[in-house]
Length: 89
Image 1: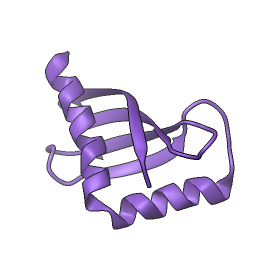
Image 2: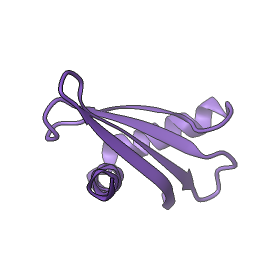
Image 3: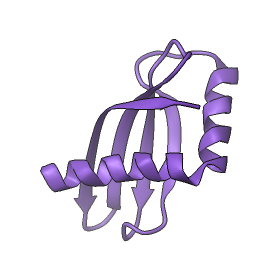
Image 4: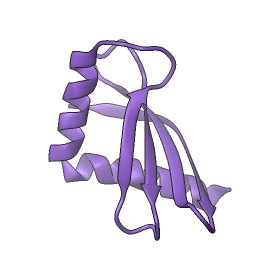
């Protein structure tokens, strides 16, 4: 599955830890996605995946979620995009 990152941001909060969002598009999917990333110390990451602007097909978002669960390199690319946005802030 090919995807392109459209934008990213990350903030570090003393109480919440790292909280970031990355907006991306998946080739062949009509709607953009946004992943919200959470990490207490910037090491192990949890996430929530949703459509960026408006709801779309549940089947498509389920496919993207399964892809991110299986492909560590893809997930790491999203985390790295958020971390790079922090460094640019």
